Image (cartoon, rainbow, N blue to C red):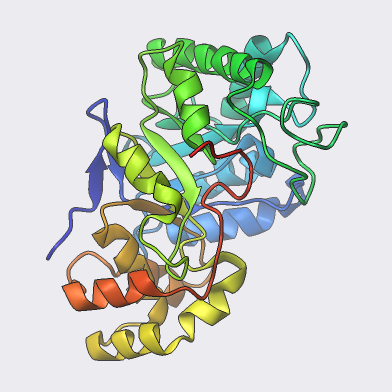
Length: 323
């Protein structure tokens, strides 16, 4: 089964099924590494058709220069970015709408573009006494302290305010599509109460080894509402070694003449989802993209779906499920 390299979003826009994950180190000091990685990933030698970055990654200048170094024309490239919850690591009450607009503009300026193809809200907002347990509410803490209760009035109102700000950018043509990341059903229902713009994408932590092809029913929940699931950490996150060395993935890879990494990425896209990949060498990048012109058997898909060796929460424990 040959798969198309793009996937249609709910507003008719075609998004590359696989884009390069240009994550940052938390400081603009990693500009050189970002430039070199993107120069290679976007080059004709490799062929990634787009990239995923975020204001929170603090490497937008490197992304800008990496795009330029690749020689890839902007009009042929999918540029996807994210804004922090309400625009800042420390939430400013009453300023969610304006702060979102300000950081959106700042991010585009640093990226050197007039518009982007996709903008995501990076996570639900951290609000003291309304879900997240850490009273300081530092969203950029290395370890997320608790979970956001999207059913509570205050975080829901903040999400709706941020979504309205991004909607204005969508209507103005500054972003071709809008989406979210790390949102569970309560968060999605909150947005639906105040807007007819359904998120085109929900970027979630998803990979083989989680014990199911639909952990917590979250992937089917999104798909049923017209929201494309875009997997991050598709090679297993912190459990990558366990997943890629398992008897199942290695045996299936050997049967097809593919690496274990290619096998588990093919499993994600064959399920109908999109993904971001973040390799740093040419062979690994090419392996990441080698998923479209071959297929796994139904039996192999079931084998991989049943693997329960790398448990994770699709939302990275950022919100409270009310199922």
